[in-house]
Amino acid sequence: MEMAKSQNCVSSLPVPVKKIWLDLIPPRIEIFTWFAMMGKINSKAKLLSLNIIRPSEALCIFCNATIECADHLLLLCEFSAGIWNWWLNLWGLRWALPGSLKDAFDQWAISGRNSFLKKVWRAIFSIIIWSIWKERNSRIFDNKSCSIAQIQDLILTRLSWWISGWGDPFPYTAAEIICNPLCLAWKSSDGAIKGPAIPSPPKPWSPPRNATLKWNVDALVSSSQSMSAIGGVLRNHKGVFMCVFSSPIPPIEINSAEVLAIFRAIQISMRYENIRSNHLEIESDSMNAVRWCNEDKGGPWNLNFQLNFI
Ligand SMILES: [Zn+2]
Image (tube, rainbow, N blue to C red; front, side):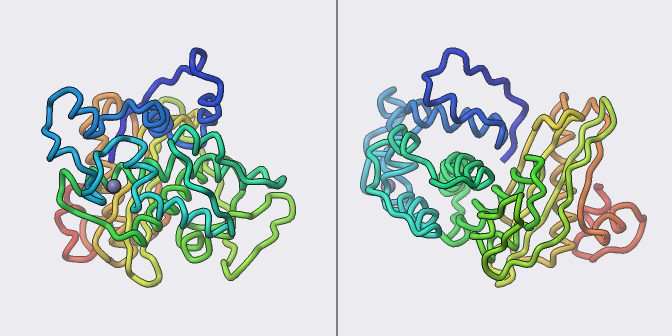
């Protein structure tokens, strides 16, 4: 997935919708959430109403039983409801499935005084919607599908990448969140830790120089090797999100996955004039990946193409 910078303007929106715009996730995903709640995404139901497709082509890709409208696709379908329920079950919660995304959004809250967890809840609402939409597109256009477990891991991975832009000294990595999502109940004040996650030192985001854009790329290989993913976030020197990508990749060694993340960031940068025309920095946590990219030789043979390109 790729996205260019989007402007947002909330002044004329209905009041509840303003709650989405909290700068917790990239604007493009926030805007997608808003469109989805308004039923304004290009669902098959919409294409059917415009006579672009036939009724037989308008069925939901997940259940193949119901016409695909935004509410069905992203909430009511058994497939999607399973993802919502997975998140709620993590926290020991249940809900009677709301009738629409708008109702779901209105009900979407976690009680308590943990302000960090409240931000996680607000962000995860959009991330779940976005991740279901990405899966739908991947099945329709690329004929590729992820399992529910892989989508859950991707949701937590995306969440982890956005959290890194919030400025909280949240100490857990994507892999640790996947291993124990309850570590998201972390509080900045007491650092209380539930469960087996191991704290690692916080790594605050450091801005690039003026007029420079900075990619933070990351790769994740889950401990069970069932899921690997790469992602990146591009920000300007003020920390404003410019572009994001995230995608599953075949299981691969972690340093090699980091090289693929750097490769992808450069590919995307070359494609867009508003990125290409700036100075760029790319930051990766993998010393090996950075060394392979900076040296003329070395690195795994199967990454020759990507390393030469970089
Ligand atoms: Zn369905």
